[in-house]
Length: 317
Ligand code: BYC
Image (cartoon, rainbow, N blue to C red; front, top):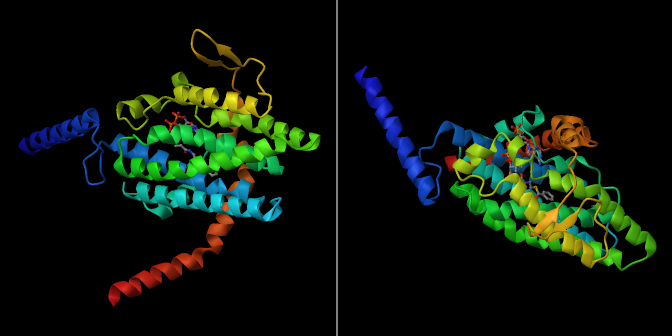
């Protein structure tokens, strides 16, 4: 009984220390004590984030061999390589919380872990590469700039580095769109078509509305999320609409209009049925994305085995 009381007191003290750090805005580091829920939330979010970076290489990879110039190909290759690197930083950050890379990949392959809704749509034309860079990376930056101040140290530091690269990605996408809008009528139509198809799924990237988001209240309390899903979505809309107008694109939302009182844009309803269909595995490309990932992961098994054998050999020298 005495032992149990001591244990309860110790747990209470550790929780107080953790809460004090969160309140002061100190970073939580891997060896710090943290509540189970905090650790679980981070593992889920960071691993999903890592999977998104890696799966996100597929729709862009589809255009490497068909890029319209050597320069465009070089830029696209560099961008895709960056996304792979982001995945690696993020898997490493998640590993500091006590999960292995293998466990995370198994969770992805068995459907226990999600990845961003956006990568389940096909990249049909070169303009889609512009739309992905401009809108998808643009949405990701808004989210990730806010996550630079997230309470978990390794995640926050990964975000600082990732944001620097994402802003280059966003600009390369916008440059593609701007160039196409200055081109022939066919090119302009292609850019508008890409805008029409990527706009709504990009808004969904921020997750369900605040009242419908089960994880937000804990995430805000623990300062994992520094802004809510709707706040970030609004920021993205307000930033992107003038960019679209500047190059002559029409926003595919008839209800979109500037609200003088709120000093931001009002937008039309988001199709949440589509969102849940996609994140639950039934989007246009879910099966293709997962089959590709599983196949390539299997084929790359020998590289992992060789790297492991090499590091073991080095340990023994
Ligand atoms: N897609 O309570 P909520 C990139 C799920 S990649 C899929 O609001 P939370 C790039 C959510 O997981 C950058 N699922 O959750 C790469 C939860 O289901 P579970 C990707 C989503 O975690 C290559 C349920 O809905 N960025 O830039 O508080 C090429 C309820 O949601 C989504 C990140 O990953 C979604 N969009 O908030 C180009 C950002 N949204 O897990 C570019 C990091 C929600 O209970 N993640 N769900 O089964 C986050 O900031 C947060 O996790 C979210 C969701 C805002 C996405």
